[in-house]
Structure formats: structure tokens, C-alpha cells
Length: 449
Image 1 (cartoon, rainbow, N blue to C red):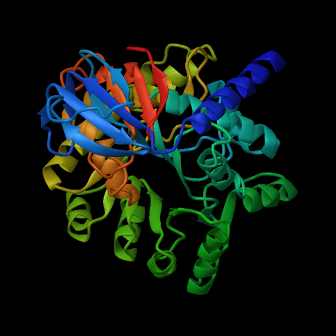
Image 2: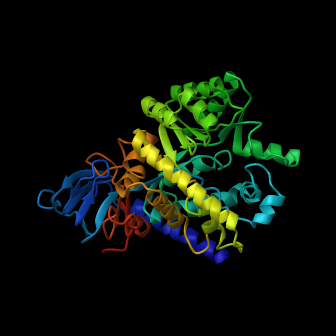
């Protein structure tokens, strides 16, 4: 274990040094057979992208976009270029190993089942190393931007973001939420030793108490930590007035509000309060989707457990007994999620995608598990181009970064990935990213030198 951590730290240092060492203002020309604009669906073929320092300068046909003298040229041959991928809902400071079902059933503790409890009670330093590894693995899989929505302790995600931005360690661009805002009666940390429960609450959450003033104060506490977004978990014990105060205070500080709202009641509370995105939204009605569309509220789809996701996470770790009831539940849940996807596409509501990634799967990196989760949306009935939009241009708009990332255009950050085949024809190409560039710096190139 020690040697593995040492190798990881050395690799992180070497990559960081390489990124810093490249001269400012360096020009790079990237050529490929195809370039997909996810927003329009248009393809440039063949394609060339001229990059100056960390931004795209020109995009077009190779005979129109020429490399100036001294520029580095990267020829990706028959590959398809895409914007860097975005995971809009992740928890990189968790590294959950699914326990046996008997343990979960016998030690049930609301939403904080034993695996989550084990993750959040570990040393903050240990969690920081885990998050740094997850961040590096995400980046190497082509995920160049991640929104971390809680469970990072008091300041883990903001410090990870700042370390990456400073070039100390490799990782994606991070939007950090700091601590989640929750009501004390929430489903988290129930039935614990009271002393332990209070410590976990203070470490992972900021408490709402029903008053608008307390809601505003919680937002300000996160503002003090220099967060990028406010995350709220809404159940029946959070009122519209309370959540509206959160939204008003967050917007006053130019921050968006993302709300965990899976059921109809919490979704309606979030809509009425005027938040910016609804996370999960699994039970949204057609009427609620229309309201979200009309108010410009994003739906952040998280098909993490679609198609038996729980078993895929658990099977490499524990023996999962054959269970006809679970198989039947999987079929029912698949049909329900497929119906949601159909209604979302029909409604015209803005949507993006997050993975809720917090899982450890032996033999796979965090990035590999994340990319495989992206593919679930296509399995659930979403056309491949719409899936690509969800994790590129739509995701950038939801994050408030549409002027920086999400498409390959002049003036935007040079976050590029490449796959060998056409991802619109085969969405699983997103699981096989072969080239990654973040801010003009090559992170990975398995296609050419």
C-alpha cells in the first residue's frame, strides 16, 4: 500500500511539473479526422484546432487553420475530437465499498448506511489523498470538469480545487459546494451515538432550522469557504420560504443553488423556491417538468443505479446472492427511469448529467466507473448525441461556465478529448477516451506522439 501511494504521489508530482514547465503562450495545433460540436450536432471533417496557451484560437478545416512556425503539432489521425467531459454531480472525497446487504439491513441508519459512515469518519488527510487520486483518474478518463456536491468535510473540495488550479496536483476543473445545507430532521445520521452524530453533522453539513435568517447564515458560512455553488438536501422538513431564502442569498453572492430533490414534494419545493438545478428528480411529473422548463431550472439526471447499478458496484466486493425480488425491482426501476427520460426529452426542460460518483470498484479507476455511468443514459433511451450534450455543452451551461467550456470554440478553454470511433454511432466510445487535453496541456495521448 505504501509503495502504491508513493507511486501515486510521484506520478502526481511529475505530471504537475510537466504542466508548469511548458512555456506560456505556446501554440499547439491539434488535427483529427473529425470534430463534433455537441451543441449543434455538426461535424467538421477533417478538423484542426489551433490553441494558444490555454485557450482555443481557431477551429476549422486543416487548409484554413495553419500552425505558425515553432508550434507543436499533434496529429490524431482518424480520431474524433470532443470537448472535455463534465461530471455535474460527484463526491470525490467518498470511496464507498458496498457492504453485504445483511450488514446494511441490520445497521440501517437513514441515508448514512455503514459504508458512508466509514468514509466520512476517516482522517481528513486520508480523504484528501483519496480525492486527489479520484481527481487524477477522472482527468485521465477525459473528465475535465467536475462539480463536487458535498461530503468533502468542511473545506476539502475547495482546497482540492485550489491545489489543482495552482498546479500542485493534476485533476479536473472543480466547482466546490462545501458543506451541504440540511435540516436537522433529515435522513442523515439517525440513531447514532449523539456525540458522534453531532461531530459528523458539523463536519459534513450546515444546519437549517426553519428560519430564513438561519438559511441565509448557512449560505454565508459556505461563502466564507469560497465555494462555487450551494448544495441543499430537501425533504419535507425544508419549507419553500426557507429554501427561497437560501436561493436569494446565494444569488446575491452570484452562486447557483443545486437541490437534492428525488420525490414530487421536494421537487415542488425546489421549483417554488427558484433554485437553479434539481439533482436526481426521479419522480418529477410532466407538470413539474414544464414548470422547470418555463423557469429555466436544470434537471441534473443521475442514472447511477440504472440497469442494476447496485449489483455492478457490489458484485466485485461481496457475494451477491441470486434474488428474484431484486431482479424484479431492477426491471421496474428501469422502466420507471426510461419513462422519465422519454418525458424529459418531450418536455423541453434543460438537462445535464451527473453520476453521483462515490464508489470504489476493484480493478477500475474512478474515471472508468464514471464514464461507464454516462453510458447509462443512452441505455435508458436517450439518443447518443443528447447524452454527449448532457456531459458537455448542457453541463457547461448548468454550471454557469458556458463561456469557458462545453464546446470547442475560439476564446474557450482548450479542454479536448478524442476517441477512435464515432461516439454518436457508439456511445461506449466515451469509456475509451484515448487523448485528453486540459487548458492546452496534454494529459494523455495514446493515439500519437
